[in-house]
Amino acid sequence: MADTTTHVYGKSTKTEAKFYSDAKEYWDGLQPTIDAMLGGYAKISPTDIDGSRAFLRPFMKISGGETNSNRALDCGAGIGRITKRLLLPMFTTVDLVELSQKFVDAAPKFIGEESKRVGKFTCSGLQDFTPDVGHYDVIWCQWVLGHLRNDDLVNFFRRCKKGLSEKGIVVVKENVTSTNNSDFDELDSSFTRPLDVLVQLIQNSGLVILKQQKQKGFPKGLYDVYMFALK
Ligand SMILES: C[S@@+](CC[C@H](N)C(=O)[O-])C[C@H]1O[C@@H](n2cnc3c(N)ncnc32)[C@H](O)[C@@H]1O
Image (cartoon, rainbow, N blue to C red; front, top):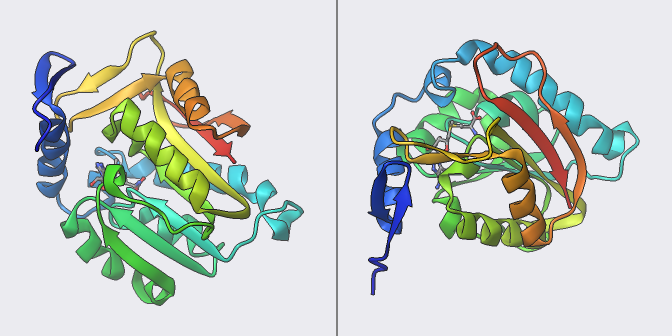
C-alpha cells in the first residue's frame, strides 16, 4: 500500500511520493540543455569539470593512486554533461542513471561519437536504483542528492558502497548551505543541506571520507560546493 504519511518540506506538507513526483514533473518540463542542467549557469561548466578532474586524478592508478579506470557510473546524469567532459575521457566505459526519460533520450546525441563507450543508460530515481555489486571504480553523484530524502540518501550510499570495485570510490559533489538548516527549493522539490548534515549522512551510511574539498572559482552568490571522495 502507498505510504500516505505527510512530511514538512519547506513551507509545504506533502507525502514522500509527491516530494519525488514534483521533482520529476519539474525536470521533465525542461529542455535537454547544459543551461537547464545547471540552472541557467552553463558558463560555470568548464570550471566545474576542471575542479572535478583535479580532485579525482590523484586517486587514479594512472596518476599514482589505487583506483582503476575501467568503469564509472554517473548518477543523476541529466544529458551526460559529466559523462562527456569528465568520465569518458578517463574511463573505458561509463553507465548513466537519470530520472527523466527525456534527458536519457537526449544523452547519446549530446555525448556524440564517444557514446558508443556508454554501457547502460538507465532511467530511474536514485531512491529506487541499485548499482551492480562490486562493479564500479568510480560512482559520481553531482547536484542530485538533494533530491533524495535523508533516509533514502543513506540507503542509496549503502548500495553505492556495495557497488564499488576493489579500491573504488564514490564521489559526491553538492551545494551546501552556509546556515544550520537545510533549504528546501519549492521549484524543483530538492533540499540543500548544511555541510555537517551531509557529512553526518555519509557517516551514517558507513562510507568513509578520504578527501573533502571546496570547489573554487564559482561566481559569488551561488551556494558553496563541496567535493567528497568516499570509500
Ligand atoms: C541539477 S541537474 C544535474 C545534472 C548532472 N548531474 C550535471 O551536473 O550536469 C539534476 C539532475 O538530476 C536528475 N534527478 C532529479 N531527481 C532525481 C532522482 N531522484 N534520481 C535520479 N536523478 C534525479 C534531474 O532529472 C537532473 O537531470
